[in-house]
Image (cartoon, rainbow, N blue to C red):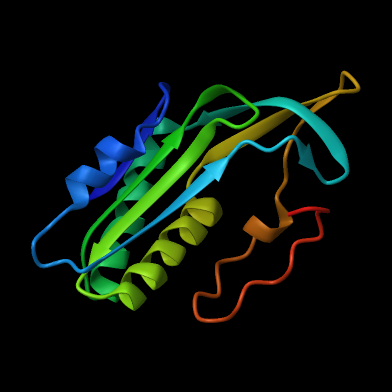
Length: 158
């Protein structure tokens, strides 16, 4: 099972991971993005994701297809939640299986970076002080640099 999907119900990484298993794969890598309680100095109560679903699915599937061509991997899947999410809930999941771990790591990073950059999904945060706002993620505004080490987070405790 390769591809991308949007869903409004809770993500099920165990079910999705099972779809990526293969006898030819010796490595599996996943990424889980959770709703955190703090962003850019604000205390976050919850958030909401909205998507232009038809275009999101089309572009997400294109990204997974690119990863399958770019890296020697066997299977890849990305699932993104929409709707209201509480602190600690799983918002996005990426899984990649490959013959070897390095390819799986690199493809997983490629998929999440490109999804954050290219897929029309928007996040609205609700803050402890009563305000809310649509998040403009500066780090997501530029395509990923897939072969360089990540920069350290500016968030305390991240």
